[in-house]
Image (cartoon, rainbow, N blue to C red; front, side):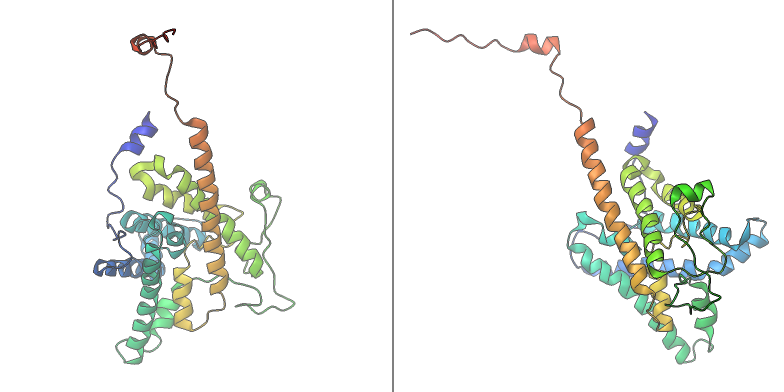
Length: 308
């Protein structure tokens, strides 16, 4: 069938094969590159949106432009480095790597610290004009508005509501998304966790059948989840940009909630997808055929025991 043929096609992706065979080697320096490329693409978002607007791309509001650029980033990064090559939450759940992923995880996170301290040092030393980082970098990095954490709560503060997927699609629940409201930390964690779970679960279960189209489907699924009425956070899916902003602003209050949501969703997806795959193997495994007449005829009959 077409699906099996597609899955059997050799995929050129990811284009950059990151070293995974050893716990630590000199080649592991390549693991510092994906976060740098990722942050460049994230920080370039405002300029990229202005560019596509000027060239005739018409979308409904800034939210859809952000989702469009997120689609481009996901397609580019998954196609170049693989889903776990730039996302610590996904790398933690890459169980075939075993303990070897610990050193890679340190490099992924360490790369963000290197970029941040490099920018802050360049500004302090005068290589960048004062205020450049805040104006051009921090402003491009999003952060979820959490009530009582990074948003002050008063009588006029409105809060977003956690809506179920079905009731959101039916239009019977208004989450107050995109209305300048904040969300309770537990609401953010549950919302981000369930949608990152959906992204990881879909890609784990159906990834083997996507063949060379994995980067495209990863971008499509992520964009679809971000457009879902039930997704009030916009599906961060990767804690790196929030960590980058936390380092630059020296404000880590939001980071524990982001890490809990993304890593928790990834672990839940790993358990669920592994369970589904194990059940599928047991239910649909092909059994050897034993009714072949020629094979039975070719089998020698057992010799009868001689009587004493």
